[in-house]
Length: 194
Image (cartoon, rainbow, N blue to C red; front, side, top):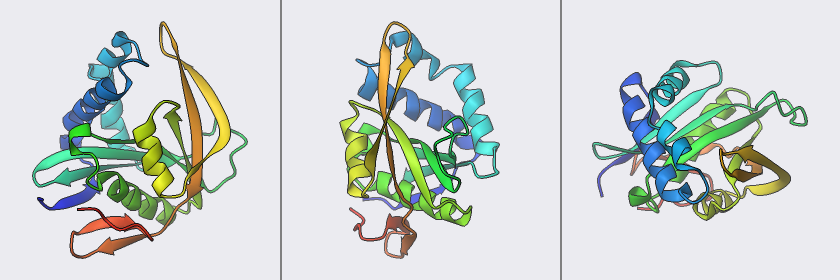
């Protein structure tokens, strides 16, 4: 296996981030999200949004996972949404965590979360939340492995001709250990998979 790393995203990564999001959503959510919404994921508005996210700063971070020369996934984190008043201060949000299906089950999701947790702890966060489509079994399994559980909150999003039901997960931010053998981040207690 080629060297797997996690690093901060740069403006040069935006096209790959857009491609990965569009391809991954098309593979994972084609039955949940209308085609028109999936098409918008690769349009100019998506590129503009990711360009802004990469440059945002102030508690907002976008990370990319690489394997060899390939960008294989990404994670975006931010302070918890102010529109959710029941959330206590000190919480952050995993806005997006995606690994292309063809690169799945190789530890990239855990490395991305480990690096994100390290940044969020440095920013002063004590815990975090993530919203997932209720039917997203693969992402749910990734969060299950790090000890995150549903907290009982559910929301329904308007997805054009249908509704998308999401569940909220929450959990602690485990301080990441740096694994010198793979130069990757791993959350405490979880071995890095090859």
